Amino acid sequence: MQSLFQILMLILDVIWFIIIAHVIMSWLINFQVLNLRQPLVAQIWDGLSRLLEPAYSAIRRILPPMGGLDLAPLVALIGVYAIRIILANNAGVFYGY
Image 1: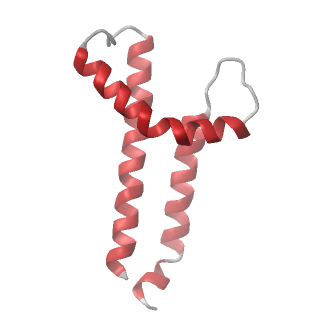
Image 2: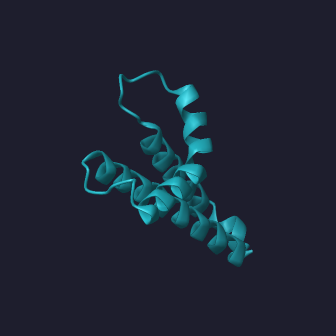
């Protein structure tokens, strides 16, 4: 069971990294540091968007409109961190204590 706990924590770490990469990339695109006409940038952006858009759209349905401010990534990061805290506090279940 310890390995299951570690795998779950690894998956949450990967999700955290993907969300952070998506947020940073969106800033770089909006500030015109990155250009979506470059094929590699467009592919990475499309891949990250396809991964995260289902979660973001579910969060956006719950959140009220914020006038152009998208808080879905922040809520997703808080959710991932909350799940990590819950798993860490219940680690005894996985370790058999």
